[in-house]
View 1: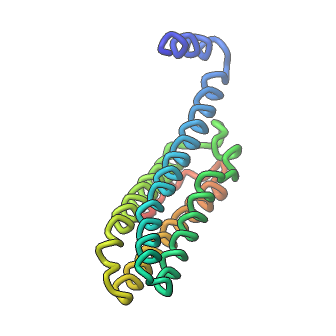
View 2: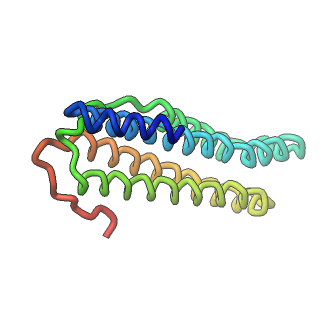
View 3: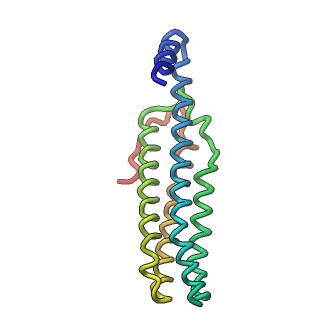
Length: 177
């Protein structure tokens, strides 16, 4: 693989614009891998929730399944959005348009997305311990649902940031304080 990279770097030195093309393609690949990794983690997050639903069903607490089912559907929706996102990346990843401040903003969004997925994973694992009462289960499920909504909003903000980047956008505004 390093031989291929060295060969590509040499080729990039000899053909104007080629190294930029390779960098653009690499950014697209990394972005896709990042989104697939997050989506895989979101899929795995549903497992402890499914186990709680199974336990509720087997112990005759069918009326309490609703909040957990709602959370599962919400996480499924976010997982699919993240996995299958196909929006303005072509324009964003064009080398002529992208600047380091823009990349930094996207990387901050990416870090925030990872942290929010980690929070969802923790909350999902803790749900079983909070499901001994109907009220505890309902409150814990509502917290997980809000965390999934927050993740979804952050993904929306990342989308809008990418869509609004233009050739002269070099602001690199901090997003999270």
